[in-house]
Length: 399
Image (cartoon, rainbow, N blue to C red; front, side):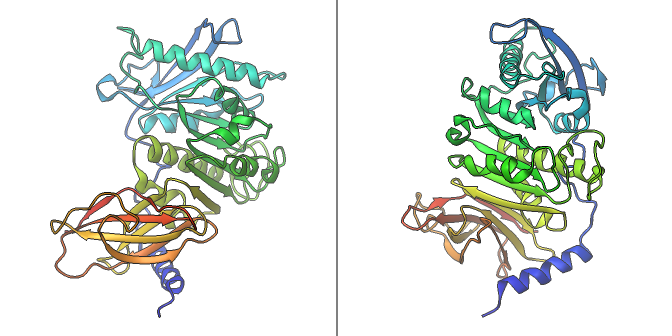
């Protein structure tokens, strides 16, 4: 029997030598120019008497107060919650990058002084979410018609991660959370969260060492339908900022690029349904980067990519729960339809069976038989003693 691990290792070496590095990846700027507006307002949900914030959005041209691209909307809505002594302007590269991929990002700018109140930042961010949601309905406002009705997402750095989990006690519309170098505070909402969760840590984080902070967020979020762990090897606490604040083994520019990739790719995958982007987040598309990754998904992920070798092959990536029994099925396009949901993949032909490793992430390369012009794939992941859980269905057309 051929050892799949050796085949995959050989395939990866081949890819690194032969693949074009000009392909679009999530850290590349998106298609939208980005506008920025600073706002201030009073709101009954806030802690501050006046809430200030910067709002980044897809625009017709780039710059402050640029006209919004309302024709391209509505867009997914996310909030950004800053860390200690760090206004949104410190994260402008990351936030602009998110907005360039078609997100409206509201970044609260209160609690940026030496004496930060995490609970106050949570209240102010909560007020900002609802203020933006209200302005989405106001004729003539720059946010008119710009926001999708939900679900919402939130991105936080350091203490901002704790602030997100504070506001989750009051705001059920936040279903996706991306946390980077989170500073751990014991909050019951971490274990109660049932949405999608990304926790990014850095191995040289001396301010909030990842083992007892970012990694603990990942561990405690055990009820998340999807949780993803990414450890940036050689990175420090402030890799998401625009500028370096300390010396780390990994250059700051690389740290910042990886934060842009992980956070923006995760939001696009979860909020825009672009699950194939998981190839660049946890799959072979990130294998050459200094990132250790892991997943634990009650709702399994399936992504597909053309395999570089052989030329006609297809790579299937899956993220489920560690040690899940994985079965991959396919149906030739036009030959039959999937039957109703079943443990065996819904009537498809069995393609592959294996056990997912402790990372929860697996890959398989499939070479289609001659004569096929399209196929549909689906995966079934099952934990011992539990019913199978199916991935999405993916259709792939061949030239």
